[in-house]
Image (cartoon, rainbow, N blue to C red; front, side):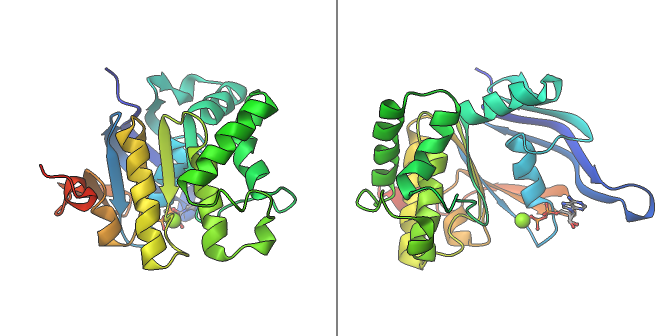
Length: 239
Ligand code: ADP
Ligand code: MG
């Protein structure tokens, strides 16, 4: 079985000459179905670059990124966009909700862009809003929501439909700790049901929900560990 996400010697250089920045250097990483990996590291260490590459929003300078076994570097723009819409859920650091669309319409959007019938997208959208506890706010516009509610809508949009890979860049940033834990529980549950997850976080308590934590410094993976607590402990499951 091939991993859902595979980085093989991935490097990303921004700019050239004296302004050149090595955002990632020869990163190898594999995430299987049912597995969640946390990424930690100081500001500027390459965490967002890693997520952008995993989501096909950026391309490596060298090396290969494969999602569900497909090398995104060998795809055209359209093909890559289709793979992303079908398989990848992305929670951006700044939510990226569309203000002119209601919460439910925002959540339905990835499915509709991919050609799912409106009725079916609606049912899936409501289910995703329910997963984040917002089933009653589907008709509300992002500007009429609290930061925490908007963030949960962004998470619902990343989880809608059968996502194989869920990427989240500090998804708990604007949330209080109770809501933050609830979000982690939601992401973990989705991974348990067969997705692969990659999550950037500054919070060790949130990283504890992952199976492994990868530490980045200056674009290099400097360490990789299993979680101290382990997700089973947090879910209350006896090992
Ligand atoms: P993190 O998310 O860990 O803070 P980033 O992946 O955003 O780190 O950035 C890694 C490095 O790459 C930083 O030095 C950053 O300034 C640089 N960088 C990121 N994106 C760009 C870009 N589009 N152009 C030039 N430099 C960039
Ligand atoms: Mg970042």
